[in-house]
Amino acid sequence: MIYLKKAYRTAETDQQDVRAAVAAILQGIADGGEEAARAYARDLDKWTGEIVVSEAARKAAADAVPERLKEDIRFSHANIRRFAEAQRATISDCVVEILPGLTAGQRQIPVSAAGCYVPGGRYSHVASAIMTITTAKVAGVPHITACSPPRPDVGIPPAILFAMDLCGADVILNMGGVQGVAAMANGLFGLPKADILVGPGNQYVAEAKRVLFGQVGIDMFAGPTDSMVVADASADAEMVAFDLVGQAEHGHNSPVWLVTSDAALAQKVLDLVPRLIDTLPPVNRDSARAAWDGMAEVILCDGPEEMAEVADRYAPEHLHVQARDLEWWLQRLKAYGSLFLGEETTVAFGDKTSGPNHVLPTSGAARYTGGLSVHKFMKTVTWQRATRAATRPLAEATARISRLEGMEGHARSADIRLAKFFPGEKFDLIPDITAS
Image 1 (spheres, rainbow, N blue to C red):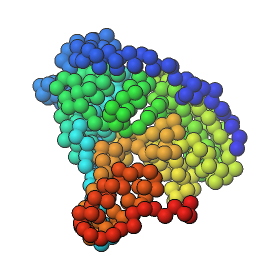
Image 2: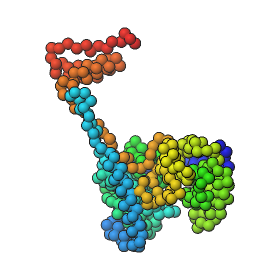
Image 3: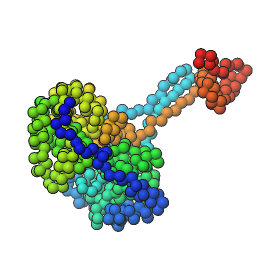
Image 4: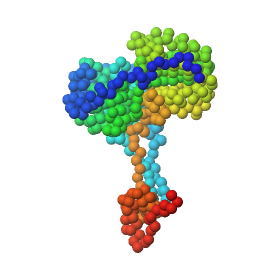
């Protein structure tokens, strides 16, 4: 394995220390409630208008969005809803008789309230509104709040507001950043307290979710977005280069990686990417150039197996295979947020319209978790019921194990059932510890 281009920055080393600032805002809102949240919205969002978006504002936003764009948003919403519905169909309740008279089962129960964060700022993240709210709706969450940073004197951009409304947000807040997250977590502005917070955001939003985890659930710990292309000699170098540039434009701290077994392809991509970046509009160009110069890597490997080993080690958020034998890659790869197979698809499709969710684990978290899905909004809970006949072996074994562990209270809660249900009978409730 040879690094033809090596990153000199990483997502970890490049992040600013934001913990003190986030902690101060969260504590300020915990102490000051709605007035504190309004003050942060005024100071940080430059927003003094309504916090809870009115029905009239929702309608005005819909009227302001061109019909062709509405059709595109509806197209994306339909695809994402269809995939989420297919996921929901795989989750079911179950009942099993473990032994005669002992029945146990599981139920799938959605959380009562979800808070969906939709990023704003440099880009209008319409797709994030669709991904988060739609998935919560399909999961059956009874109350969904969404928030997004308002633009001064405008509020949430009309296209985002239209998407939030279309997907079923019950309440929408003109509030971004830590203050928006805190408002949903603490149940401000007449909201129920969120059981779970989901959605991407900048480092301040990610840190706020990390701090609040425990008080509420979160979808995942997330850092800057990252993407990897795995390509062999059959790949189109120009297409690979465009795909890398497209993901680098997310921001200066968004790494992109090329893993390839073909040195000629690697060199073509290294030559193409800077030229393609130069053709972007200025704001996109600056972000992509900073990401490519400081965080991109190009890795030359000795064949498919070594390429797969590198991909599994990096565990990228987005993993795009442009190589022969796609079925082999599908079965071999084990650590990624979302997998894109073949040149006919691209991460941009997944980011915007194709169906699988784009809220995904970053910074190697794909080693242990998947992305946002209906599962994240649901609790798998268990139940059990026993006949008196089934109680006998359960209570005997429970009493002996409990006493072996030194938990006499547990043992006696088993003893009393034996005494009540089987009066006059003798039981051996002392563990045999001679073997130990």
